[in-house]
Length: 253
Length: 262
Image (cartoon, rainbow over all chains, first blue to last red; front, side, top):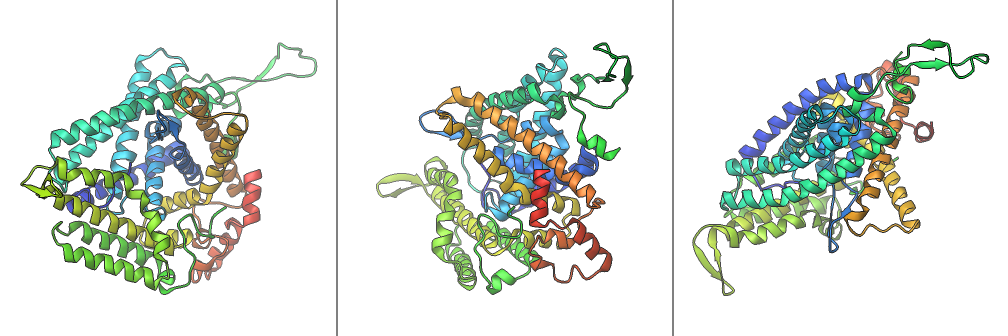
């Protein structure tokens, strides 16, 4: 849920706005390393994907449903800095064109749901991937663990901001326990769905999953002549990273 | 392809508010809501004044209240929180309708509701009176990094394409008898997300190749941001070189369709 206007006082809102602007600035530079000159179209399309992800409702029980925040999912799929950029773009467009989330709370929303979920999710993902067996099958599991931790940590971040700049004097312990309780449940849902979604992607297009790249073997392109039969003799080094050669590499060549 | 043809919340019109430069509207929105947020909770007449200002702007823009009010539902979840505040807050107990609640909590709940509602209403007015393309140009004029504006323009341009794709997948699932009732159906829905990601990513690669083929050099001229109608681009296409590049990378509706089908 997006933080609306008036939840946090003006100084805190401005401070989180500065944090968010700095983070987006850094992400702009780093994302170019993850995407090179494809940054604008790819980040834009992935941002549209994240927006769509937040539209897909998952039924929970008794008629209620929830949706994915998508921070950890985006980090594993496209890399952390591109993900920060995409989620920030989503929150800016939602605030300006959809009146969703307060305009003064934009910095807070970007910081908590764009920056904290992505970075925490990705760090936990990296740690889990390092510990788990070095196989493709570990990637969805690590992604799920990242999602599981990222949501309650973002909720704790909100409690921290609330302690500094909250506009009401509700008992902090009450806020903390309520936020943590609810968001641990949300985190479990986020983890299961992230695990399943990354699993389905790793099964068919592992080359598109940023977090799975270390486990992809470089394959040699084998060219069979008419007389070669099945044990092709001529081999060429090709920079394909997955089952299919990536079109982008052809384009930049 | 929604570019240049308004978006979900856009209310078509030609009032002074619609014509006002987008960068001024964004600045006005941010400073207005900041002032609202900084107002003490117990300054009741001031909030009435804020509401009057917004209603005045809505009247000036010819946006009817029947259009704005139903769209306030965005804030429903947090209204629930505000209504709980009088019971959760610490402070002097007072009797309201025979129920003992905290007086500070009551004031805080009023402040939250007033600030939140005024904030949503102000944002709604911006969205209702500003085309997406004009907004992007306004952000560029406010010195938002060009790269970020580019990313936003691609997101806005392809938002409907991607969400329509999701909707078609939904129709396809339902027409095969699938109903999402409880978490047992999550694997199917998660695979939908996986498939949507593949389609979106590959579309992004095709769009990038189509841009390269049209001479994309890392920058997008202002005229292209303005979209096919080019309404907001007066004064930006005058420069010879820029105008040339604009005609190369300008997203013509038919051309965009070819990019999609590439």
